Amino acid sequence: MLLDYVLWRPGMPDGVSDLHRGRVDTVVPALGGMFVVLESGSGFLPLRDGTATLSQGDHVLVRVSRSAQGGKGPRLVLVPHPADQKLAGPVALLTRGPDPLASLADTYPDATITTDDPSLASLLAPALRHRIRLADEAIPAEIETLIDALSGPEVTLPGGMRASIYATPALVAIDMDTGSASAGRQTKQTAQFAANRLAIPPLLHQLRLRNLSGAILIDLAGLASRKRAALRPDIEAALALDPLQPRLLGFTALGLAEILRPRIHPPLHELLSGAHAAGLAALREAGRHMANPPHRLPRLVAGLGVATALERDGVAREALARRAGQPISIRVDPSLPSLAWKLEHD
Image (cartoon, rainbow, N blue to C red; front, side, top):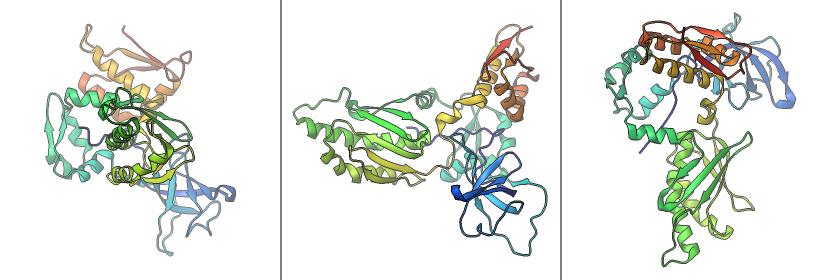
């Protein structure tokens, strides 16, 4: 069973819990907050206690409470500081928040950190380095299969059921289907109620594994609307196991279970798409080419988006260079689509 899953990209952290010295750029009462200039880009600070007196140009101490995701910048919270403490100075990132691996290590304090890359130790907090174990295969094949399945919309559930998960900009829609589930000697409604009940815990565990958040609607399989509410205790018990403590808000007029899960880190489907994901895929493919003649890294020709993302992620480039014994050459080709890339050998 896959208990938890996060992607850790040391060269491109999502910024959650980072502490910044920022500067108020624009106060927008209609949006209920203000935009704050950060070291790279800007974030949104809602109007709450302590922010009412702020105006354009003021320096503020802020922490990132939600990463940039869904095309929106990071969400910020104001960090109190003594009135006599001056914040004037350049906009700057002051401290980084904990990385996903450190957070998982806190959640599972007795777990070993297994890796096939000895250089990983240099990226870990010193307190974690004694937990590292080197192995030829860091992730067993059966776990790799479970991880690969997280990138697709289909989920196989107990009792012959399945679910289809679709994330949209507004919400996450989940459709459950009885699939090959059979009623046997039971009535159809009794069998489908039992099948839904059995499938709910592993389905809701997918919210955690995929880090799906915001508004989530679930269409339970084959149940009349009046029967769906009877599954409330099962849904709430499964949600209580999630550290983000999502809430079942109720059932819509159409009988859809309505769940709200806090948005903090980017969802998995966003991390697996976009320029940075394409760039990392290109580096992995370049590394695989080392096994074939002429046994050296090919040149990476990339669209502007991919090239820019890899320029920012020096950690990923350096990791490949250590394994290959040479840096990879990256050339921007303006004729390629922004997210496209190809490999070339001399």
